[in-house]
Length: 133
Ligand SMILES: [Zn+2]
Image 1: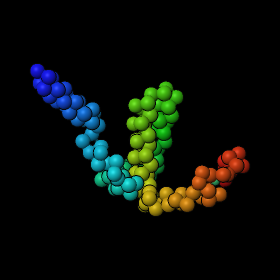
Image 2: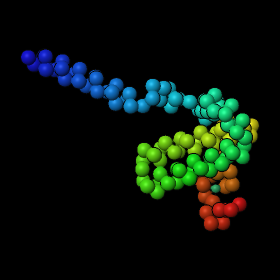
Image 3: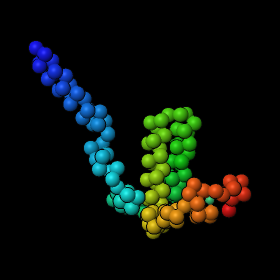
Image 4: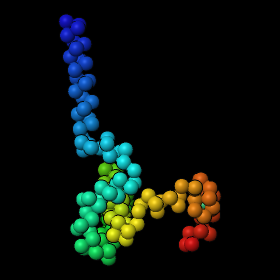
């Protein structure tokens, strides 16, 4: 009896874990290992043809619209939406970068040595003084 109960309990645990994980897309774990460059290639694979045909101006407008949706999700404190809109904004930004021929990782290299202005990490810049420069 006891053994039977323990076995059932163990089965319940092992069934629950994959169920929790399955709420994410199947490649979610793999995609966590991607670097920014790989994400840009992924977004290009999915959207570059469409986005480049639409053109820079219209695609940039979509990015701005997404940022508006991101802002609304933040104001509503909708955690799930915030995360989704964050991903959408990044996807649109990467796509605009691709249209402009910008390599995202190469562009972000300017931050690898800390703040590009004061060269410290964390930044030591005076926030008010450097806001619009
Ligand atoms: Zn700084």
